[in-house]
Amino acid sequence: MTALLEFQNVDVFYGPIQALRNVSLSINEGETVSLIGANGAGKSTLLMSIFGQPRAAQGNILYQGQDITRKTAHFVASNGIAQAPEGRHVFPDMSVEENLLMGTIPIGTKWVDEDMQRMFDLFPRLKERRNQRAMTMSGGEQQMLAIARALMSRPKLLLLDEPSLGLAPIVVKHIFQILRELAQSGMTIFLVEQNANHALKLSDRAYVMVTGEIRMTGTGQELLADPQVQEAYLGGH
Amino acid sequence: METARGMRLRLLGTCPVRFIRLVLSCSLASLTVHLFPLRENLIVDGIFLQQLINGLTLGSVYGLIAIGYTMVYGIIGMINFAHGDVYMVSAYLAAIGIALLSFFGFESFPFIIFGTLLFTIAVTGMYGYAIERIAYKPLRNSTRLAPLISAIGMSLILQNYVQISQGARQQGIPTMLDGALRFHIGEGFVQLTYTKLFIIVASIAGMLILTYIIKYTRLGRMCRATQQDRKMAQILGINTDRVISYVFVIGAAMAALAGVLITLNYGTFDFNAGFIIGIKAFTAAVLGGIGSLPGAMLGGIILGVAEAQFSGLVNSDFKDVFAFSLLVTIMIFRPQGLLGKPQVAKV
Image (cartoon, rainbow over the protein chains, first blue to last red):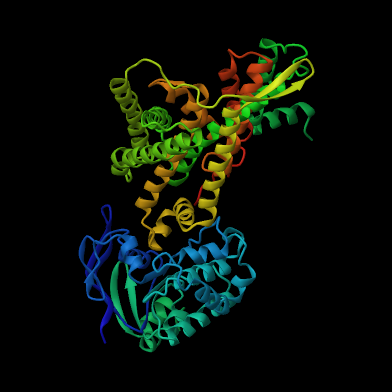
């Protein structure tokens, strides 16, 4: 299998503070890979560095074999990487439909009707609220909207940053159910989560990040069974 | 148990802002009434209606220029102090356009005005693009103050450039559109010149077209997305630098429309013409709520009408004082402007 996205010895700094240390990882086509770690470990920084925000100081980020380390965010997005970022970042003053339309920027509006229908089938709640402004919706609905918006660009690689953040357990369950369906349909997913239990059960492979370094890697099942991971991220014993 | 005095003190103590607001607004209001006693029987001979027409004309033009301020503020959070001078440049361009078309022997008013509009909007749009590229884009990631200072510099450059290349004298164009509609009211009459009618219609058309673009087109959605969350817009594949350029071009185009219309009405302008009208349009933008598009239009019309009514009914020498007092009063009671949204600090 070829790696769709590959980090090669990447260092990232925020001013004098080093956020990522010599990070190497790869995501193959069709895989669901997750990155787990505590708050502040650098997981979101890693995702954002794909878009050059912040830019990697050392090392390379390869996408489909092409070096994208120094490319602009919109270039990366136009080439098939979509992200549902941490904190959702839906456009607060736009309706659900308009938010979904914003997802089609990289591919144009050729398939917009079909895709929007697909999103409404996937997330029926969004259909009910299609003309409502995003800021008036609940956290779970906004998360669904953020994921649906990312899917509207028909991405080759879907990046998800903490989709469970701040949501009720039942909503988290629902969202992971949908992610599982997406994964089974062949979508390549890179998932960043603090909720290690859900993430590891969903993933083919996973990486564990501690203070900016990759400490451990393995299949989802291996890590779920690992005593150290259980201790640190799954509530132990 | 609290005594009444204690309670009063506590009230004053807990909300000094409200107290200062009260004192300020009372003194402002009383000052206005004391200084400027109303003339008598003005409404009867139609001055009110006449000034309403004049105010709408002026206000719609303020609104057009205010759009440039408000859109640029909305998208990059800076006040484009060179915007008034962009308007000034467009007034010169309008005169040049009219002169050129007349020189080539075109005589029909609609053709000349349409050609001039196209020419002025296109060239002023290029000015807007170039100004953003030269003065603001290199400062995109610096402190908030830097582009502000750069804008003032750009404003001075434009004024001096026009003064040197066109001369310091006042320039003018002949009246293009004669005639007026007259309505008799009592002993007096109200006059709506065709020029003013044209200005009001053209401004409203300009605003409607812009509103349509911002609300329903892909470009408009990209502008709004960039305004609401620039980083997310980039992640979705929007070239936000280009969107910001578009916004400057749109703002300049609206100023160009205003420039053509004002030149048609007043006929004269000089290199300094952008200053006072720029400040007024900025006031209109703040009045309506800076960052809000309908706010800019509404603010422009309210400011224009209020100013015209004041100069007609009270005193025309102090109309600027009144306009800015109106701004101060609204800022005291509604700091976010009429249609603006209050700034909520994100934690």
